[in-house]
Structure formats: structure tokens, C-alpha cells
Image (cartoon, rainbow, N blue to C red; front, side, top):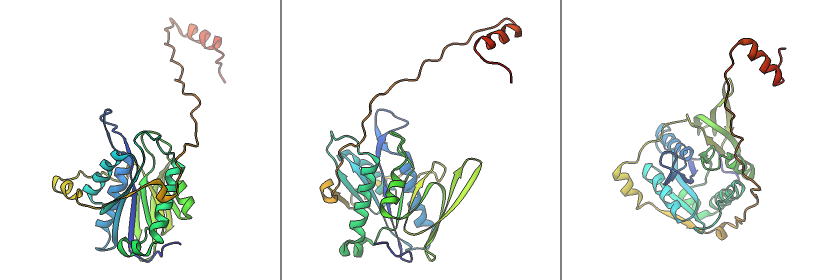
Length: 263
């Protein structure tokens, strides 16, 4: 059932634990997901007080994924959900992640008790891609599974809750494109949307007391068996060093010998 666009905003922000791009020996939140969390918080700050009712972060992965959820809670998310996978389980593929999120949203939006507590999810904001696999398709798949509108690669987000609309500016070759969508909607964030804030020490301590809902794949009816198989990984051929020529005539002769001729 599609949520009413006239209601208060309840935002779901999926986050992923990925290799830290600045310190390769540790993991942290995927940078594009950091931008998504920040944008959800900025929407709360920009819109009239009370417009954003609830911000929930969700992550799918082993127990260590709780670290990125605590980070999201420390910077401003109200609650979190963790779909726990075994430590040695293969990384879930985008379609499985999208199915997990769709199942969670449908359960949330059709459970009277959960709706009364947190409200229906009507806006999903997530990073456009993860920096470990660079696939960039989860948001689009999620929108398709839910039957919601989508606005990808957002560099600016404006929400008009009264009209039930979202206007997203996205960067394209040669300029910018504005996309107008009706709520509910899935938005994926681009690099220049915002600059994520740092969590303060008091908020880090408060995050430890915020609720984290724990689920198993069986609770959502999702099978994480990999559907893709990597057949081969090869390095690109090494570049051959250049050479020097003594004259323009020699350069022309070498180009002709390589099959390069003038038009």
C-alpha cells in the first residue's frame, strides 16, 4: 500500500560498512551513505519543525555493521535496524539488498503497531553507490520493487510536503537536470549534495542509548545466495614506454608504419 503523500516525513537511510577510503586497513561508513544520512538530517533542519517525524538508519551485514549504525545515530538518526548476516557470509548482491529493504518497508508500512510508533516510510535516501563494488544499482532496483518514483545522483533536494512533491537536481553531462517526483520516492545521493558533519562526543555517547532493531534474513523472507559468479579477473595490459625521434620526418614514417595516416 502506498503511503499518503500528505503525511509527515519518515525517512529510511540504508548505510553500508565499507573499506575506509582514507585508511585502507579499517572499515567505516560508505562515503555516499554518509552524504545520505547528512541530507536526511538537513531536511529535518530545513523543513518546518515536526515535518520530519523520524529518521531510521538500516544496515545489512555482520555484527561489525553496528559500527556504522552507531555513527548514523550519533550524527542525528533517531533509531536503527540491523539485518544480521554471518561473519563469513559473502557480501549480499544489490538485488538481495533491494529486496531486503523493500520487504522491511512493506512490513513497516503494513504493521499497525509500527506505524503508530514510527509512521510509514515515505522517503528513502541512500548513496548512489558503494565504493567497494561501485555497482550503483540498489536504489533503482528498490524503487522498481516498491513501485515508487526515483531520483538518482542528487546534487540538490527540495521537499514540499504540503504538495507531496520532491524536486531533485541531478548533474548530467553539460549541465543540470531537475526531476519532480511525487512522494513516496527513492533518492540516491551524489558527491556534491552536501558535506557530512562530524559526530560530537556527547552525541556519540547518546547514540549508545538509541534503539537498534535486530532482524534475521528469515524475518524478511530473503535468500542471500549469490546469483552472480565472477569468472575471471585480469589486469589491463602494461603500457609500453614511448620512444624518441630525431626529426619530424622520422615521426611521420613511424606513424605510417603503425598504420596512422592523415585524413
